[in-house]
Length: 58
Image 1 (cartoon, one colour):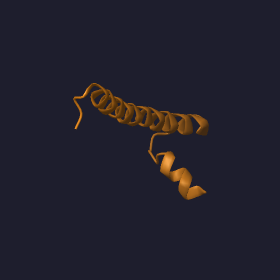
Image 2 (tube, one colour):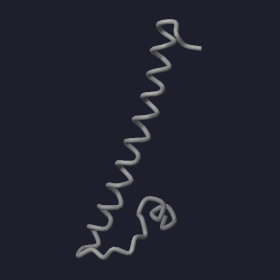
Image 3 (cartoon, one colour):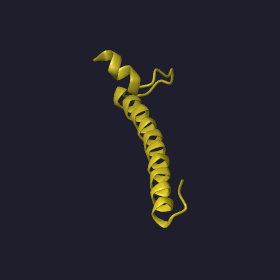
């Protein structure tokens, strides 16, 4: 379980007043990165589906 937590929480050296602040900052940056990657994936999927639907696809 600890190994899984290390994948999502960064080990940055910045000190926070509360440990929850470190967890929140790490989780938020991971969430934003995930949203960006998922958005790119679904944009590409939608684009391919749209082009295939109108006959411009492969």
